[in-house]
Image (tube, rainbow, N blue to C red; front, side, top):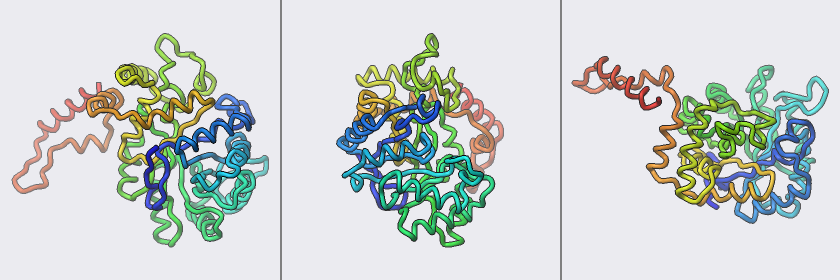
Length: 356
């Protein structure tokens, strides 16, 4: 297992992070995703730690707290071996204030998570997504207080838009509050939208990137084909995240060839590609059994060649959108340089042909 620094925290986390969303099955959606009980969770956690994983992520909303409870028990005696992350924002009860990112809800949520996880502190506490009814400053002040109280050590975010993350960083800087050290976002060969705005921002601001669903909700496992779109798996009952399936089939075809050349699996190629992206800190993997877990663990030993990365780049790259396509105009910034619109038109057409 290899380790990477989490943002500017100075702490090293394994490049694979165990996701505990498969733990528990309280509710139809969570049962479809995982439904694992305590015995299975114990085995998955133990195998992960033995393989060198020191980073585990969950959320209070996963199975309405059951995931945290199962994880807390599974970590008994090994709590200090891991960087433990959880999240808050989702609805946790029927009360009108049992949801969101208000100081009231966050304060109650962190206490409940600490109890369920059976720990005195949470290493990384993340907001699960934005809350349109609570100001970002109020949320950041509540998180800052929790850091000062020693209940959480670092703060992160998840599923924000780039402008929202930049807004939060600006507030933190102006007000002297804890800043988000990382973002947890969806990123895969079938979903590269993050590259438009978020990844350039992360590079500029030194923010870590934790990737969820590197297999696009199971679509990139290779078991879904044009002739078998109803294969057994999570996507059959929980078709998420949304993807362009025709394009994804082309991606799977390309990955399958690469996997065969390496004697690897299609999921290993998908995860290895994400790990090869320079802005990625850690990739979150979820498993329903040891077979899936061991296969995912094998991705860290798969090194894709430049030509293989180029093949995957061409089959999965994003269609150029404004204002990105303005960047294809030849520069006229240096003395003697002249902007030639006919040349720009040729380069634009060439770029679009590469995408087809």
